[in-house]
Amino acid sequence: MSAGVSLLKRATVDIDTFVQRLDGRVKFLYFIWATALVYVFYDPFINLIFLAVTLLMAFHARVARPILTTLLVIVVPWILIAVPILSLPLGFPWNKTVIGYIEVMGVKYPVYLEGFGWGFTWPLRIAVAISSALLFFLTTNQARLVATLFEMRVPFKAIYAIVATFQFIPLLAREADVIMQAQTARGLRTDVGLVGRVKNYLAVVIPLTLSTLNRVQTRAIALESRGFSSPAKKTLLYEARLAALDYAFLAGMLIATLLLALVYTYIGYSPIARLPWVWGGG
Image (cartoon, rainbow, N blue to C red; front, side):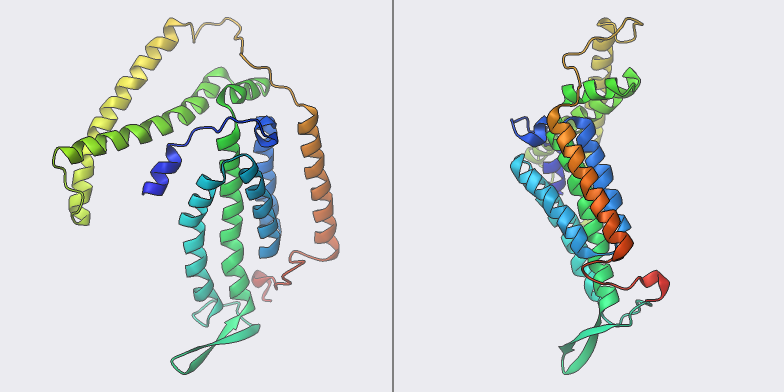
C-alpha cells in the first residue's frame, strides 16, 4: 500500500529535458502507439525493447523511480507466478514444445516454450502500457496539458475535470496520510487482523470524505466567482504548438512503425523469440 500511496503523491516533474519539452499530445500518442504495438506482436523480446526505450526516457526525465516501483509491485509478481504455472505441466492446454527440464525431489518436470513465452509476454505488455502512461502523467505540465486539450477542441468543463483529477489525487493521498498519522497518534491500532483493520480505516475514510466535500465546495465557489461558466472566450497561459522536436519524435515513431510492419509481414508476429501462436494450436 505504501508504494501505491507514494505514487499517488507524485506530481509532475518539471525539469528541462527533451521528454518534458515534448508536447502532451505526442506523449499521449506514444502511450497509445506503444501499447497497441506490443499487443500486435507475440514476442517478449519486442516487449522488452519497448519497455527499455520507455524506461530510458523515464531515466532521462528523472521519473524512473516511481515507474520502476510500480512495475516491481504489479508486473514482477505476475511474472513470478505466471511463468511457473504456464510453463510447467500444470494444465496450460497449448504446451507442446519442451525446452528443458526442472528436477524437483528427484522428479523431472518438462518446461514448455509456449507457456514460458506466454507467461512473460502478457506481463510485459502490461508493463509497457503502465510505464508509457506514467511517463505521460509524470512529465506533462498541467498548464501545458490544458492548452493541449484546448487546442484539441475538448470542452472546457471536460478539461477542468481531467486536470482537477490530476490535482486531487496527490492532495487526497497526502491528506489521507496525515489523517492516518493523526488517528494513530490518538491510539488507533494498525497491528490488528484484517476485519479490525477494515474497521479502523473508517476512521480515515469518514474525515477524508468530509474534507474532500468541503474542498470541492470551496473550489466550486471560487471557480464561479471567477466566471468559470461564463460564455466569454477563455484565454490560456500557454499556447500549444508542435515544435521541431515533436515532429522529429513523431517521425521516429512513423519509421519504427514501418519497420515493424515489414518485420510482421515478412518474419511474423514473433520475429525474435519464434514462439508458436498458441491460439492457432502451435
